[in-house]
Length: 258
Image (cartoon, rainbow, N blue to C red; front, side, top):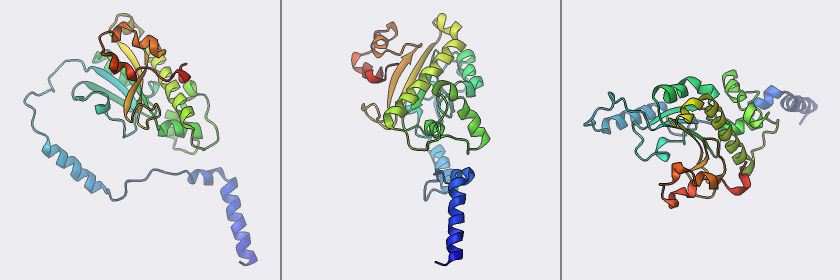
């Protein structure tokens, strides 16, 4: 390699290592699934619609409140069938980055104050890309994404500058901490309905990656109306009629109790 080529190589390396924007461009990006072009996706959507049988009873005119106003992360793996087996007409869904109340106040208010759902279920999830984006530092992302992630400064503190993947236990603590914070925010906002026993605020984690060791895609309830102690939650009047076997997914591991 000649002197000119060596010099050019050194200049390129300097540009990459000392230019933040260049390093930002090196961030791994999520790509479209290989072999799934848009026309194939549209075809699947239309084919699904053609297989749906017309309902004998039209639900459009029903005035019944949905069982749940569900505030969840925008992760495509998080689906309502993990919450209720028959979810149609029972779950009013609001989704955003890291299941934050502040970034979706209007839609959540609509579910709680207008539709009068008796349960506000706030759900974080393991293997959370939104939490990892926040903790790694996100200054290189688009302004609209940064604005939403900025709200996580309150529950989680300020992000570091290390893009290293979070250790599972640390990531889980952050996910739980965020859920607890969102529950507190909701309790302040909807205090009147809670005091009149019209609303229960439930904090939960959908364990996509089996961090809790209870099986993938299990919904773990970690907070009810601000109570975070698992044993206390299981003894709540609210759960007195629940089969004790079903209470296995209530409460976080003792090591992570706040």
